[in-house]
Image (cartoon, rainbow, N blue to C red; front, side):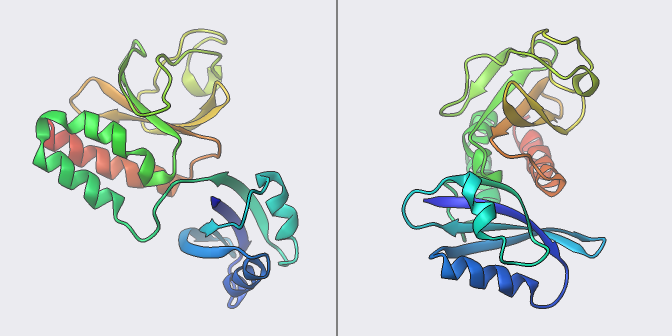
Length: 212
């Protein structure tokens, strides 16, 4: 199985090597490492690993407890292909067929951040316009009033600015598509990092220009 592991660890020489050694002793093959942030003496890194057999994501933290100061922030299955360039591939397909820019965006956006699915919704109504494989037909359910600016239990409403939050049992990333009256929404089982949000914002801005 392939997993994404998000870990927080002391930002000091050798810490990353300790994680790699422990993963190696557990039989995991490290396919990719992405540094998300370095501040306050700690670093947050994403490891994409191939894990032998089937494992419970809840037990991964216990297996990595041998590394001093390490915290496993999240672990989730992924279908990403390490070493590929999903940003460039997405933009290349959009440039080749601008008329399908937003359909292409929805189909390819999950691969940018290891999301489970993506949709575009009509701003203000939450109507699903485009959907990727496994995406729901509609986005409905309880909302957090403080985050979304709505009342508990009302219909799903996209926030006006790029945001990461949790609703209906999913961690969501929501981004308005400039000039299109649409929002791109991505979902997965683990929280999104602000570095991932910034990455998708830049891609969406380019797609919006090409797709006008």
